[in-house]
Structure formats: C-alpha cells, structure tokens
Image 1: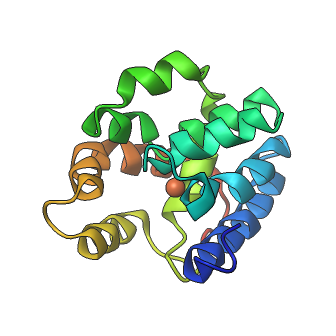
Image 2: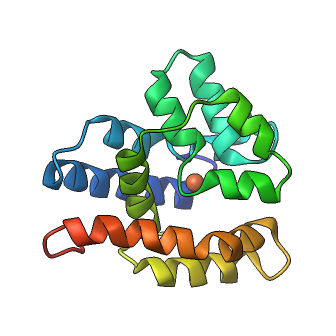
Length: 169
Ligand SMILES: [Fe+2]
C-alpha cells in the first residue's frame, strides 16, 4: 500500500521494522513490536486516508480487517499520537475508539520510529524532531504536535536507549 505511491515512507517503515526486530530481541519483547512497526504508518496509504490523521486512519483500517487489538492499539497511539490527535481536534475520538497500548511496547515502537529518518537511516531522536519540523514547516499541525510532544518523545526514547547495549544499530 505504501511502496508504490510513497516509496520514501516505505523505506522508513522497512527500517523501523528492522530496528524493531533488533530491539525486540535485545529486550526480549513480544513479536507484536515488529508487527506494529511494519504497520505503524499504513494510515498514510492514499486509499486509507479518511481523517488525514494517519494513526487513526491506519488503526481503523487494521481493526476493520481483523488485526489483533493489541497491534491496532500500538498503531493508534504510536509515537505520542494522542498528543497529535489533540492538536488536530481528534483526541476524544482516538481515546473513544481504541484501548490504550501496552506501555513498554509503546516506548519501544516510539524509539524505533524516532531513531529512523525518512530514508531509513539512523538519527538521534532530537535530530529527528528537528528534521520533522523542517520538513513540515512552522505552521503545520505536525510541527505544533512535535513542539508540544518533544519532551515526552525524548524522555520515552531515552528510557529505551538506556536499556539497549551499545545502540545505535
Ligand atoms: Fe507515524
């Protein structure tokens, strides 16, 4: 769904999944992390765009096709999506529709997403936030989200970083 129309996004997703596999192994986490990593940005697929907020559109699609609810929640709330939902006026919809995701896997998925740049390369989380702001520009909802969520994103990423021997990978 992403490979044809959004090849750059797809490159990012493949690298997030690769990092998730490594993190899951290092920290003995459930395979759900890897599955969610593969699926986390599916809501960007043009055919799935409904609200234009990709965690919600992606999670709704995954629920529709019967994906396990734990995975769906990880996608719905990935990388502080609840904060971006609030910025977009979709906060209560997200919370009403999807159960909270497992905290450790949520942190681990955020770490994988926030250490993987748009082309799949390793980036420091703080750098990734700078890159996102630059890509979307000053007035965009995504930029407002990143500004509001920065400390939470960096704290969560640091929690995972501390547990990983000799990152990055
Ligand atoms: Fe995403």
